[in-house]
Length: 457
Image 1 (spheres, helix red, strand yellow):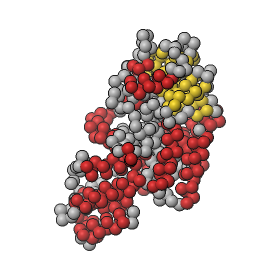
Image 2 (cartoon, helix red, strand yellow; image 1 turned 120 degrees about the vertical axis):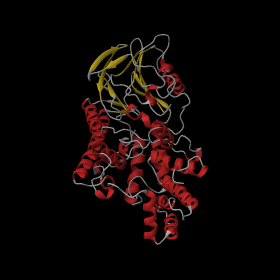
Image 3 (cartoon, rainbow, N blue to C red; image 1 turned 60 degrees about the horizontal axis):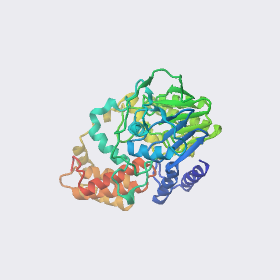
Image 4 (cartoon, rainbow, N blue to C red; image 1 turned 30 degrees about the horizontal axis):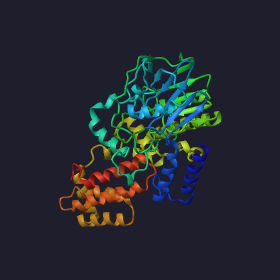
């Protein structure tokens, strides 16, 4: 942990001191790549011996799977995306114990944690533990699954060519996905109350409800070993309080409270749902405390801005992590971002309307584009401004201008499309936030190949 943390911290500090960053997660292309490559040490494929009888397989898919060795069997915590990746991880874990699997525990219902369970089952069917509300993680917005699936592919860069791949912020870029979900086994034991205790294979296990990334999440505490399994409520990057693939509101306040409760156990070993385990009481407690504080700070600042009558866009550009948390290696915005979180909190608490009557019934995009062109001095002037912005590497502005130009009947829509592709690639090259980077580059490729025909083209 220390070596990797030092590399990334030095990179981030050097970026801030040099003034390279223009805000958000945009830096010089070389810096973005260095930071993402350094983060990859968090999910290199390996089995980590966390402590005497606890082992975590990292990097065999996007998430982690862990094995706790007991007297007459083992416990598996989370099971990856599908049986192929799970079988590969289990084979590596079997170097440490060949005892039968007595129990499987799902920390929450996201597919990359539950889809490989069958690979861990032998002659004896184990008990499978989950919360009573298991399965509620994404059910509320199933009606929009078709578009979520497309956006998921972009967020994780699943179709990016090898030369454009980096990683997913908390997971490797290339994972085995053809059999996703095929090894899922339904829970047989449900946990309805926090603090439920069980002895499994001679190991004392406590189950604690802990809503965070999902409402059906729980964290697992091994009191004798001082080991805490956090699931996806903690991982070494700023959390995805909102996922750009599209999610229902994730209760940010509950997430902060859950992580603060984890810190109260003062674990000596912290095993996240993704990225490397953290060893040592001081480091584990500090990470959880900082994580909870960071989430709560973003929430509190957003609520303050809301009550001051500010718009979500204004608040998103104003909220920052407290200074003492900004360079913490487990809070760098490799996966989630503060601006995305702010907008999600705003919408989750207050809905889409920002209170400004100007935005109550805005002009339709085509009419607005016509008026912007008139303001610029005509369609050709607007086109020249887009080209000039590209030449000056002002990629966000070029992207916004291209979206106006594409609506204009007297405009060069092919040039607008090419301008959008160039702007997306320029932004993507400068992103160290992996989902943003992957989305920019994936969208550009879809436009260029003709796979994506935007509704206005």
